[in-house]
Length: 295
Image (cartoon, rainbow, N blue to C red; front, side):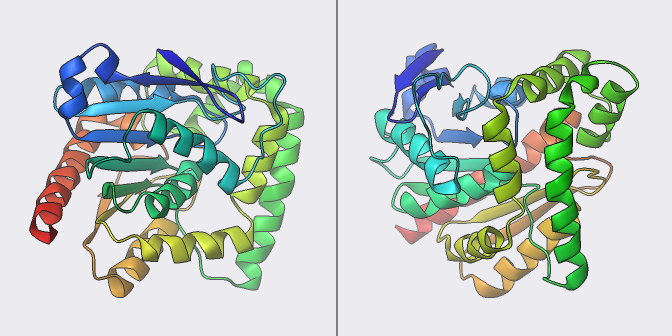
């Protein structure tokens, strides 16, 4: 558990190599969080993967234990990518080809930007529940309505601490039941995240120009990509991730795979950690072999 004094904040992060120095030689996994949540929800997955991988998690500005008082961080994809870049370089993850980047939901957008910045160090990318949609009048109207709901939900988010709203919030986030400990984490993180950051992130995540840029960036990643999605996702329509996979598969010369979790929702890493870990590990191993063949 450490802090990095960056230009944006005092960034809280955890690196399994701090308790296992031998882990510095293992393949490094950087986990990038979704909207209005701290890095705590990665813990069950990190516990499974850390014997074989160096796992790095961190709290983005506006969430968890990262401190932003006295700072004015830019609340954009570029800004969030800048703070992750400082962490990558602080830990020396940019100095050898040993880095896997894993982004969930909005974190998939940040992860994709990082993949382009650190192409020479990157072995693989994993995008979880962060898709794209064909632009129609229907989807445009849906994005407009969703933007309005973000404002409303933030103004009244305290209600999610009590039933029945608590249960509604959890069921939207996770289709399959998750441990109470992590239900509490999700509620606590959402209700205590910085309001300005949470609104900004929610809105740029559905901005059409941002989404177009995101699509181009995913197609441009030179390393293997895994698109991962819970097909019972109640937060973000899973078809968007399937569409992203199909576009990437058709356009890229690098390997692209799809992991579909048929009965899971927006948090497959919590809803069935062992299943998710198997799919991710298979991708990491395939990617390492591909990287060796290309070198």
